[in-house]
Image (cartoon, rainbow, N blue to C red; front, top):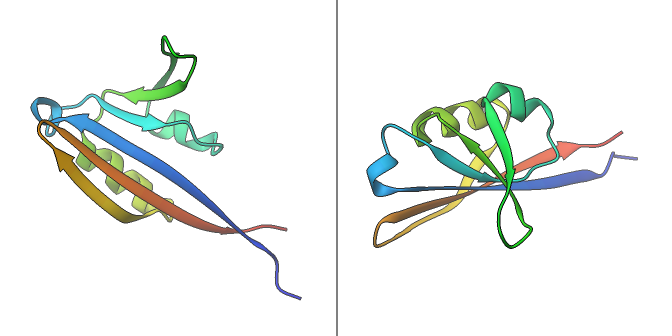
Length: 93
């Protein structure tokens, strides 16, 4: 019997002025290895939602996530904000 597949998602977003220099914001993910890999500061915003922030540029973040098996499933921009949604299929067990 095949092991079940867990799907994890990360939302990556930044402002146009930070596109090539950072910082980059990420949704909280259960992959603890990403915190060290991306030099993340975990902060809590006013609405009690956790957010991860790194000084790395979006390109650096996307490259690191790709090396961990994440792939972009959608991207969009609205005015000055750029957003990517990434997915990773992990075999459990």
